Amino acid sequence: MLRFASFFILVLFPFLAWTQTKVFKEVEIIGLQKISKEDIKPILSPYAGKNFDEGMQQELLQKLKDISHFKEVHMKLTLDQTLKIFVVERLAFAWTNFQKKYFVDEEGDLFEWFGQTQPSNLPEIQGPWKTKSELFESSSFFRQAAELSKASAVVSHAKLARVYLDETLGWSCLFEGQLIIFYVGHDKFTNKFSKLDKIWGSLMSQKDKIFRVDLNFHDRIVVELKPTISSS
Image 1 (cartoon, rainbow, N blue to C red):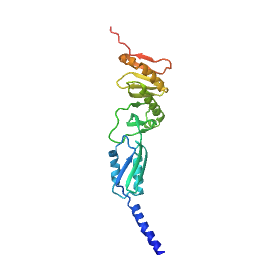
Image 2: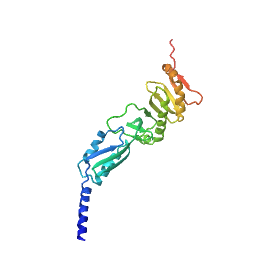
Image 3: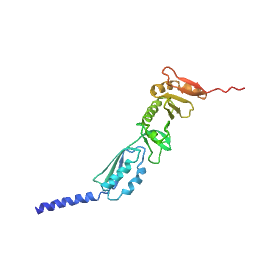
Image 4: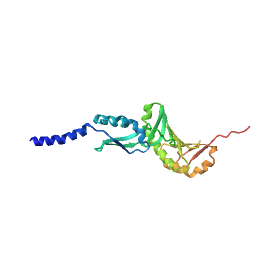
C-alpha cells in the first residue's frame, strides 16, 4: 500500500507542476486576413511570461472577443506552451459614417476596423438613420447594399463609389469618377446593372450632359439630361 502511494505521488507532482505553471512561449494566430499579428501584440504582451491560469485565459479571450472586427475567436494552450488563437475576421465590403467610421460586412453587421491599415477603396453607404440605435438596427438594409454592391460588378470599367438609401425610392448610387446618379430601387439589382452594362459606353460618351439614370423600369432605361442654359 505504501509503495502504491509513493508511485501515485511521483506521478501527481509533475502534473501539478504543469497545471500551476502554465506559461506560453509562442503565439500562433490562425485565420488573420486583413489584421496583422503586430496589431494584436499589445493585447498579448501583458500575459507573456506570466502564470497563464484559467482566469487569465478567460480574461484574454474576452478581450479578443470584444474586438468587433472578429466574428469568432477560440483559444487553446498546448502542452508545448504554444498559445493557439483561432479567429474569423469580418470582411468589409463598404463603410458608413455616423459619429465615427464603421465598416460593414456582407451579413449586414457593423464593426470598427482593428489595426493600422484600413482599406481606402470601399464604397460608402449613406442612409436615413438619425440615431446610433437606428444605424445598428439597419442590418437588413446593409445586406441589401451588399447585394447591390456585388451586382454592380457586372458593369464593365465601373467601380461603385457611394450608395444612398431612401426608404421610399430605394437605392441610388454613384460610380467612381462620375457625377451621374443611378436609381436602382429595392431589388433585381443584377438585371438592372446588366442592362446598364449594355449601354455604359454610350452613356459615358455623353456623361457631361446626363444628370441621372433611372433603372427601375422593366422595359426601358430613363435618362434625364441636365438642364440647358440658354444664352440670351
